[in-house]
Every structure is written in C-alpha cells, then in structure tokens.
Amino acid sequence: MTAKYFFIFLIFFSLSSCLGQEKETSDFTIAFGSCNNQFLKNNLWGEIKKHNPDLFIWGGDVIYSDTDKPEVMIKNYDMLLQNDDYKAFKNEFEILGTWDDHDYGQNDGGASYPMKEKSQELFLDFLGVSKNDPRRAQKGIYYSKNFPVDNKLIKVIVLDTRYFRSDLEKAKDGNKRYIPKNGGTILGQEQWEWLENELNDSKADFHIIMSSIQVWSNEHGFETWGNMPDEVTKLDMLLSRTHAKNVIFLSGDRHISEISAKKIQGVNYPVIDFTSSGMTHAYTSYKGEPNPYRVSDVIFQNNFGILHFDLKNNSVQMEIRGEKNLLLQSHAQKYPK
Image (cartoon, rainbow, N blue to C red; front, side, top):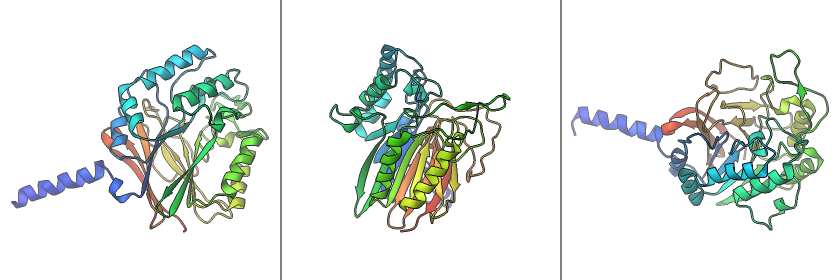
C-alpha cells in the first residue's frame, strides 16, 4: 500500500470510528429521544440502530395530539405504529418511555387535564404494556426496571411529570411563559413516596431517571422543574438522603439538546441532566438562553441521545447525535464505585 492510499485509509477509518457504532466498547447502551411529530419524517431510527442499544427510552412527545377526543389520539398513535421505520425499530429493540404534554393530550398540561385517565390507557397501549401490569391500575405512568449487566445493575426509572402536576404560574411581562412559584407539586405525594422507595431500597450501580421536562435548567421561562423550586429542593434532599448511586437524569421537551450538571450537598458526584430534543423538529431559531448548570454546547438540530456505560471503570460516555449519526456533542463522566 502506497503512502498516499495508506493516508486515505487512515482518514476513512477515523471517520468510520467517529460516525459508527461504539457498541464494542460499551457494556450497556441506552438511546433516548423526544419530540416526534408523527406527521414529519423521522430520519433517526436507522442511525440509532447503528449503536445497537440495549434499551431505547422515549422522553415524551411521542406523538403530537393535543385533544380531548380519544379517537383522535388513537389515530395519531396508529400513524406512528404503522410507520415502517419505527415498526422495524420496535421489533428489534426494547422500548420504555414516558409522556410529555403533547402525547398527554394538552399543551403544558397537568393534573387538571380532563382526559388523563383515558390518555394513560392509550399511552400504555402504545407501549404494548400488558393488561395485568401494575401501571394499568395505578394513577400515572411512572415505572422502574432493573437491567443486570454481568455483576452490575442499572436501574431505569421513568417519572410522570404530567398526571399530578399543579398549575403553573404564568408570567405577566411577556418575556417568559412561566415564572417560579412557591408550593405546588410535579410528582404528587404517591409518586414521591414511590420514588423514595425506589432509591432507598436500590442495589443498583447506576440510576437513570427519565423526567421528560428539564430538571436543572431553570431560567428560560418554559416548562422546567425550576418553576416549582420547592420540588427541586425536595429532589436535592432526596438524592442526598437516599445515597442512591450514580443518578443521571434524562429529559426532552425543549427542542434543544444540552447537558447540565449540578453539585448537590451530600452527593459525591455531579448530578447530570442530559436533555435530548427533538427527533423530528428542533428550535432552529435558537439565539441563546441562560442555564447556570450547562456543561456543553446547545444543539438545535434534530438529534437523539446515547449513553455508553463502561462498568469496569464506572464511567459513562454521553453523546448527542444527529442525522447521518453525526456526533454533535459528547461528555464523559467518571463515577464513584
């Protein structure tokens, strides 16, 4: 091989390594995404498949169906379920997920949404949840599942930030949609108690918690845990009190993607909120917004999130990837054993 062709080979190999699969260096891989308008083309299913994920987690807005008519919501779910690309993906990979407002059925909706019980039924139908599953009998779609990997354990916790959420405080100046308010709840008492039990009793080495709405970023004026500061404080205290190992939050909703990290007293690692949004449409006119916890660039093109777990070294490689599997942003985090 001449030097010229060897150099070309090296370039090709480097690009392939950057854009291709990392499965061979990952003990466990989670992919996730959100904001999937069923009327728009999703070009990412094939790209996610290249990573051969052990699990895909919906981060909400699986469909766009703001309605109080069940037949409309059923039709919209069916449109996604009959999509050839999603159908092929669904047949090959395990899928968990939560909803956000547009698949819940009401823009920025919360506890007062009148069709929430029927909406829960339809969302669980979409996920293919058994009629005997406990989620069929409870209020809300929160759920957890353990994934043993060799001698380690990864626990995935899916929160419901819609069913119990109190009304938001609307801003009056027009610069923001909402402002923080005292009191109120995001999870509701029953879900809070459940979450504490999930963390207290857990033997997991990693806890991956899907929130749907952003957890740490709190100054942009849209939906966020920061609209109810008392709930954020409660969450901080819960993480500190339970000593749950290596918690990573995932979120969607915003049509931008970024990685935020917060230092919490009593927790000996930075707690990350990894936001990936959206899959079919993004906030392409994004001009900037404050986030005191941001540790990455902001991505405002169609994308999905990937987490590669190196369980021997207790580290996680977090990646935001776009169409053609392009690596848009990455963040490596080492965790205590």
